Length: 387
Image 1 (cartoon, rainbow, N blue to C red):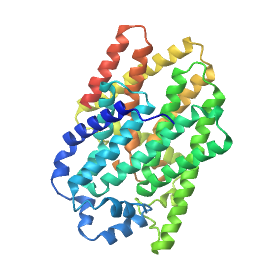
Image 2: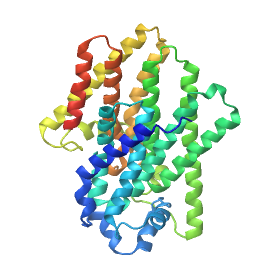
Image 3: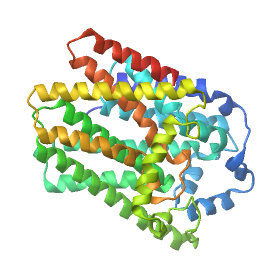
């Protein structure tokens, strides 16, 4: 594992707290519970029982260790931004973002997206614990990236150890909020795509071995999570709630046809960015900005494909990049494949698409031989600032 990059860590904290207080400071400094956060005014045991029933059995443990939202909402906000800063650091390290402007924009996206806004506004009691769940998912993908890059020199026992470590991160993340599993899956796909587009001599075996190991660690995480679910039910005497849109039991009780889920998953992803009924501001300008970002991302993506093809990359590697890209919407909105109803708190992985577009623009500007490629990167940054 690489040593901590102190400069990147410092900048990640600096920009995350800057954007965090700019966007959410008022909510941190003014106790104004609403919607689900009103349940915090009832009693902690009742709220904890509800969390265990939903399969988030580590949330009561988190509250006992780090304190309660109702006591010090401003401390809750500071702690949430600390977790988010660590997540931003891991993301920037995985994506090799070292310039301050690049780190700043990535931190801004990770800190001010719709999921964090919704948590701060109406689900403040879950903000800090959910950001820890995000950090654990990012840590899992970071460990995966680090060890698979040097997998040839590792023993089978070491590989199994890393797989179990990642599984533990994912199990803990799901026990706080299940939907952050899809952040891990999304990051694995993003990193795989970038590897295909940047390493002409990439081994097909190494690429797909790494991705199968990622799937294996996700499976280990799911098994550990389910084991913890059964153990918490036995220790507390609280059974998992069913027939509720929030319950993890929908993963195995949902009777929707699979093809219907796939169609709705893709459509919901499109709706989230391009229609008035989605999570885009209803004004036409906002939707046009998202469409422009999508177009810029496609142009830069194909620019990288042309560059790596010119460097004699194998056709199989390029096809793999396209396959991973087609899977991205289903990873980002993966909760819809399991659950018939998905809301904004389950969609954090979707906003990583903004980060991906920016990284692709940065990489294209770095390899392209023409000045207009650099202008595309700047235009992408401007549009992301607006969005």
